[in-house]
Image (cartoon, rainbow, N blue to C red; front, side, top):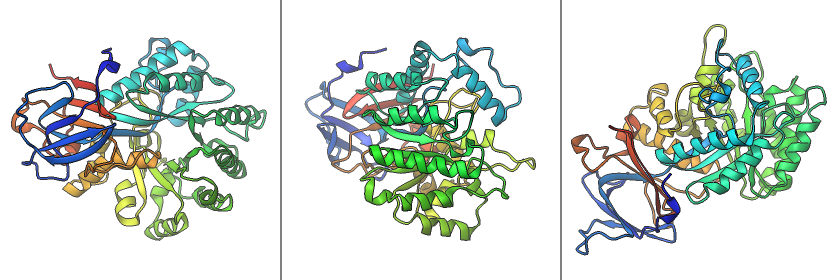
Length: 443
């Protein structure tokens, strides 16, 4: 790996196209202390090349990408030789839970670090500078995944903001010990300063009351330690099963999240049952959410592979509609890479945005720009990162991705729309004003 720490901060990025301007116009961006200082019309530099200036070569520059939801400890299980005996046979949720449970029983620090570093490294190469990384905490792995996640966070701190979510995939109130061990481990994790988020999966509990207990307990814990909250919620499609989202919203209000949580955010992931909502239910949900700081995160590749009824009905959150019709903040995310929950796909969030063009019938310029936001600026907002926008305003973090090479010719991606349709093979990633990665998969 190239020694990225040797890279000096950039003072300027010149000769670039930016998303909200005509593609024929070129711009220069000045950077100060890791943030955008100004954006001005391009002026040819008479001084020649310098160490603190990056010539964009007429390329498109846009806000960097973000994983709003990705599992750091369960990645690449289907590719890693250590787990080569664990291969998909039925492809359903029960098998995925069983296979992953068996893999978790073999987790050790060396493979967690090896696989996790690979995921972060590949993500950076694609243009990711922030991610919410889920690591499981339970009686099987204890704190192995959490410990590895915190080491990876430190290892990559100069190249990517790795936000650690201590995650209870297993029940908090069901099982032989009633979830007591998981609750103790999660309480310990919550007390750690570098753990930014707490998460759980209420739907794995034995019954509806225990699912409600799960939500209440993890919410109280997040409030106690001032953490963001991220719930895997309503991960089913059957219309005859009541979604938990209504009781969950009531609990957030009863526990006074808005008064007690400061600037901490709530994120609700999957929520596939909500895809069966009628218009009046969506409108009611908008009213019930009110001013709670809630974002929804759709996970289309996992949802389409895992979620199907006997009639082969499939569903994933209609994020474009959620944003345009009902005013929610929403994002889409990769979720899993190379495991039984999602065996296909890679670490590139733009593959999910591109899938969204067909999935949501979102092919217009406005749609494509919105889809880019759902894996970039809106994704960052969903996980509580610094606010950014496609307009690249002064004061925003200097976290960018540049597309294509200087010799790409007429097929050079000149706009965000073209990037969402087909992101291409070549990117450069800038994090806090430093060039941290270059990628070109063409031969």
